[in-house]
Length: 479
Image (tube, rainbow, N blue to C red):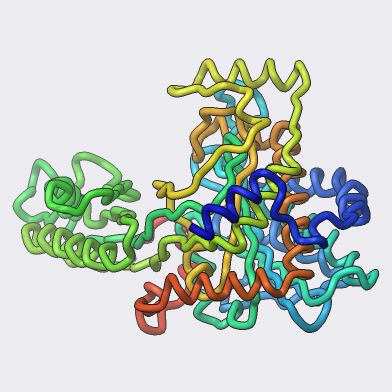
């Protein structure tokens, strides 16, 4: 009952600590000063569109900008060349801000409202991580100025986190102990509307299954061949049958990344790439065990050799009521997005390409997400199991736009994306500023995490001595 009453008062603007009403003009002024430069940085990252673990230029740009502003930067953390930690200030509280910057394959797109792929590597920011990294950097820079001016206590730590899209870099960073002394972690994500609250999501394990057989002339000597592609197809069929016998809310999906080169040559090598998801990490582990059985069955039936590369798993996200109350209030107070006629015209054209378009006016409002379970996955989940964590989404795409689409990539390169980025930076900065001045809320955040994990033990879903899969975006190799 207390939580409901407190939440209601927050929404009414009545339950506000005195410092929350203090003047934040200097904080916002610092954001205003750096906003244009940050947008240009975001566009560079959008243009580079670098794959996970290969974000060399994107990571360097953000790290160098923070270093030039006085942050102490530690590069190559957790055995990941493009991961880094940038620190400003000293003492407690220690507040972490996450920044991502990896792109997705197959989503190269110009900033126009029709499908128009960009020239280059084929990657595009269909999840808006160019905005994620840039907005988080902007907030960290503004907060550092407040620490330097003596207006804010403690330490700001920016975490440059690569390869969120399937590479699970944050899990390796958690395992390396990089979050063990942090009082609270803030994150955000681009979306098609502004959403308050931290919904849970799906835990996930991803893996690549490689089969090696024997080549032969597919017509002249088929009996001498052992088809790796047959093994892949058998595994895929077995996993489809498996779906009928899995718990509710299970998600199993795959792509065949290699399947042979010519129909008249029995494929000696084939690879299939899987994600297995469920709201409960324990269920995911068992689903993965059963998926391995499907792979072994394919190998046994085709007399091929099986190699499995487990790319790591991510836990489901844990909400934090105490921290979310602060984040949500700031999001509601600061959301005042309006759009130009040109932006509205872009949005209407995008909507004509969407399966389920939504009211454009939703972009300027804040929607509830309390109690929701998102169908996606993120390695932020692992952080939330070891450190009190809070996040939100801002409208960077046209309402109704799904993530991982060319429509999201297109909007992210326009001023629609810029406005969402700006709002995110202001909410991150305001929330961190308040938490730095409010040890009681930070203490409640830790209590909330302890309550949620009291009867559970967190252990990263990584194999013993597993290294970050730095080449997981590379083309499969037969040898």
